[in-house]
Length: 337
Image (cartoon, rainbow, N blue to C red; front, side):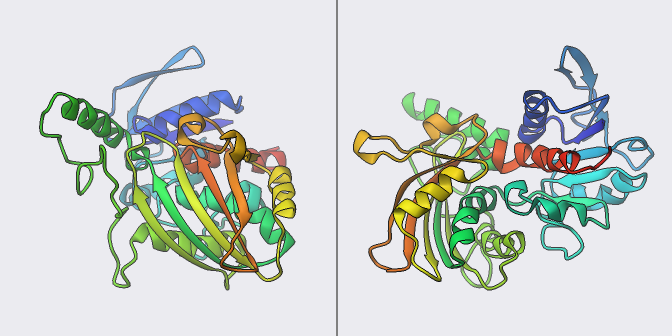
């Protein structure tokens, strides 16, 4: 398999390298692409050194089977035709194509088969917060159709990239030294603070991040009537997003049924023993592959409701890992054989 990574120097691009190695992804040839600024940087993968090439409108993608792209929406739009022209499959991490009708939006545990319906040669990787939520929603929806979801997200600095993670670390150090913290990546200081503002605000008072969860959940789950209301909050955690989720199902689902469904669910790990102080936390989930579920309980305000808490690594399952798993799913189901 000939593989390309576009945006190789970024946080997600670097995670692609780690995930491809961890997953023992079959690679015959690997090509790394980046901006003019990143071109020339060298990275080692499986004992071999690779040099980042500048992304240009040329034939560099000829012979590439799959391109994992995480270079921002404008770059994805500009270079999509260049990347796919010679038959490469583009798995794109940006939001550029997610809601296009002729581009599948895929989470393998939920709708992996959609990946084979990609007439433009593009598959979209969903938003990080949506990915981990739908992995948890799927097993419950299989028991009783979910009518409504309320979710509050607690999103780590990693969601805004490597420079945001570095800024949070620097802010902590500056505050300890009694210095004024540097604020560049976020609207306010993130250290020792919460910011109820992820992405830009829209006319209805929700942010784009919150509307992504509303729209993407419907498309991924093939449930046009499911209603999702989200509040997305940036928190002073380096990596791994957390979500408090409340759902309403058509028929009541017991806590026991929900727990069994989660335990059997693909890509999920249940950590749910509150009396023993066992529940998912970013402290223990950062760097891990699955989505972790805990605090499973009936919603005392809704007889058809359940509430639970989920944590997942935004850079792994929320980005690079999910993209690689899409390709793995396709290979396992006959692609490129």
